[in-house]
Image (cartoon, rainbow, N blue to C red; front, side, top):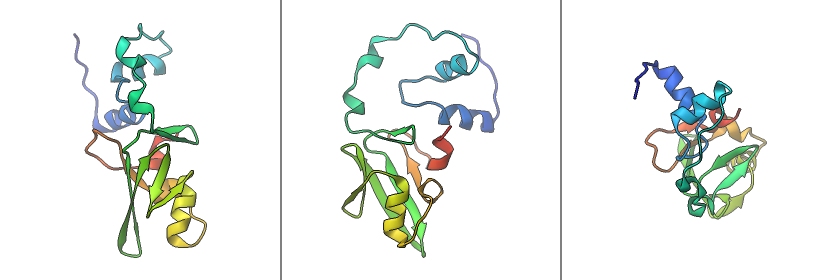
Length: 131
């Protein structure tokens, strides 16, 4: 296997483009370069982890994805459960409606919320996940 060096910004962009944990960095690069996908492995056919995922505006958040935002000095949290975003015991079908419930005004939820995908250590602004 050949190793290539990339800077941190390239690494972050590649990571953002991984739609699930089963998508490798090589898969992302092959797609970006217009190369045919390699033969799918049997692991990809396992749909158990996507059962509770939430998709909005073309972005899929796996079940268990944590959300957080800072508003008026307080940290507000949420979590993806059963195909929806759950914040303060209420279910939302968009990040903006969840943000609006916190602020009492119309808010762009894509710049209001950060998320942490299960298995990841870093938080990221959810806007960075949109293409």
